[in-house]
Image 1: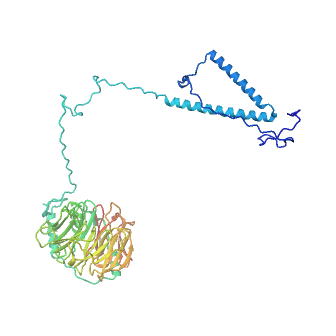
Image 2: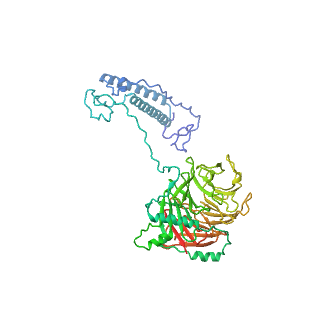
Length: 564
């Protein structure tokens, strides 16, 4: 011990605690022995009394409280005496440091006690049973509830359950029922069949067909003369009329040189015939109806996709439909004969294999090809061939070498030889694989067959050189043309002009509405504009084989005729 602790230097601790200045130094002499810090022994907590577990504060009597306070005071005095004994002989700094250590130990012990108390409270809360919900009162069995209909409960008024009524199958009526097999009378839907005007119409066309001149090969006119003749073709209100109900899918022109007869096949299964001269002459008479000269028939129940006048007898018009029937309308006998019928398959297109129109080739939507001979009795096909296409849209026969025919499928166009068709499966002679999307049609040029034109959904018309049918036929020209007609318009089909086989005719989506003609080189030759008479898209078009007459059909059943 120093005599004056205020003036004496304090001994320097082994580890200078925070807060002690660094300029205080230990006095000379031996360093005092370090005093160990009192050990803090943590004993396990005793179990809480029952009052705390029950959530109540324990009540202490005055005696207990007095005895407890007395014992606490005694223990505190002993502890203070012990601390005094321990702190005796230490410097004030060491005393203060040891006091801080003991206070910190007591503080941490109190924190631990509070944490354990919080855990105890959580355990008590978890052990408490959840609050019970209010139970709903049970319904009285003998009580009267809401009244319900016995008819809805399917109970007899006497209380006996009724027997289950057998459910009858609902019959769904076919929207397009097949017409009965066999010949059908040529009965116009828009006229009375006993009308003298209709009888005169049939007689006139039967006689005109007998005197019609058969087409012979002739040299092509120059493009200059061809353009001049096209410029002379006009349209007016008298040459525009609604012929069928619904979109038109096929158009054909009678090859007569003296009269103009237009035939149209509709999506509704109708076939409309329009005598243009008769119609115009009757319009001039005020007492006549605008429907005179137009006759509509119903030989099919589904869309008529292909329509041709017979090359051997123009008094016959052959029509093919999706309903699996191929019929021949005879003007002289006023009937529609049934040429071929297949209720299990749907037809898509047909063409004449022979020039006498006795043999036909028919394409099916499922990719099959059938050969039909009209000279044999019955309405079945002679041979059914499974082609290499999954679907066939159009079929067209080579005009010179009639053993070859071309088919347009989904993405490919194939050329077959009719002499080497195998019912089990036939491979094509040539495949045109340049198309990238769906193909609408493919046709040989009408006079020589040296060209092939295809219409594709990739907005391109392609012209191939088919003058030499070998393993490959080269692509000559690609014409950019908008062929996206949408859902409600009939798809475009580019066809050749039978008078000028190096020019194709196709509808157009451009404004103002028009019908365009392109040369095989890709150059545009002519555009038919009609002004107010042509305000819709003519998707299907056909040219007269010898005269400058063009007929176009739209998707509302109207026929537009351009003529000079």
